[in-house]
Image 1 (cartoon, rainbow, N blue to C red):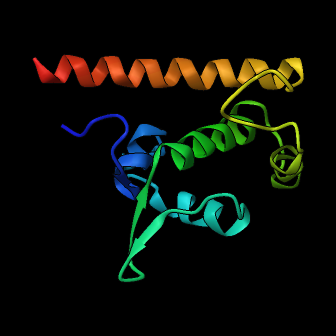
Image 2 (image 1 turned 30 degrees about the vertical axis):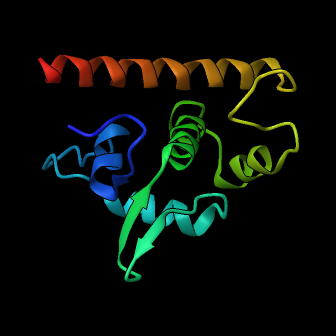
Image 3 (image 1 turned 180 degrees about the vertical axis):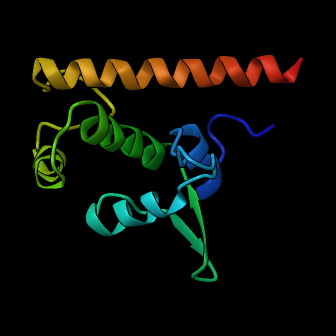
Amino acid sequence: MKLSNAYKTIGEVAELLNLKDKKNGKLNTHVIRFWEKEFKQIKPKKINNKRRYYDKKNIDLLIMIKFLLKDKGMTIKGVKKVLNDKRFNLDGEENLPISMFENNLKIKLIKISNILKELKNIK
């Protein structure tokens, strides 16, 4: 089991984000690759220009993007505005509007939930 701060593959990130095809249950990794093209802030490490590895910062960003697109119903253009806003910062909430503060809390809850799942798997 990987530690929560270890780099994760695109498949692991897709599973973490629950990006599964509703019909066949397969992971939709193409969604993450599409978001990489749309959002310049996502910068995975690429080994031999093929395999992608995502660090904590990129995963947090992907969680936020998914939340804004899927849960909040924002457009890609709207999410780009949020991410380009100088007040946007996944590391701290002091400069964020209330709605972004709430979104950051949701991300932190998802992270805690994932850490708890990892701990249960260690037993």
